[in-house]
Image (tube, rainbow over all chains, first blue to last red; front, side):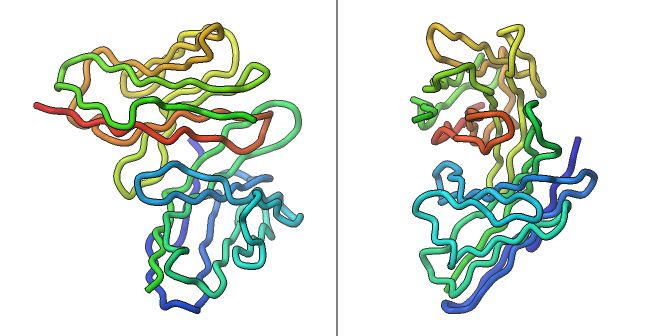
Length: 118
Length: 113
């Protein structure tokens, strides 16, 4: 199956700093990537959808100036948490979808990034 | 609005016993339905999916799920649970072709010996 990687797998940063998380599709071209957030013992909540070469679409309640998403190529999307605060500590998971059009193409999930803000 | 409900927060099953995890969805049209498993600190692994056709779907690791339109359900089953099945299980629905998934809150499965 298709493989999606995330880097780093775990990051600890100080409050006020910015952190960049990378999501890569290793063996396919991902026209669309999704970013989810998961708090401990809770479900995944969609943060934003990014399409290659376009601005990301953010879900209601997600601050686009705080969570900067860039999908500059068909294999890479980045999520930058700017001026991170302890409440941003969470597990961030990306998924990537190949192709487009009418048929439903399966999403492949990355292994996630654990962000801890001190 | 679309939603997914997993009524059971935590289930404990004896090793070797059968398992059924419940999932109900709210969606206007025929949904795309998924079951994922997540081990602690790990990403998601797809167990099985339903798009159309046969309502009984076979997945990996001996899991199966049945789509019941009349009950808006997509319950996950396994005839004999192994200790390695202990994990968090998520049911998800795709809203439209190629869009993001909406997840249920998850069910934690514990396996006792």
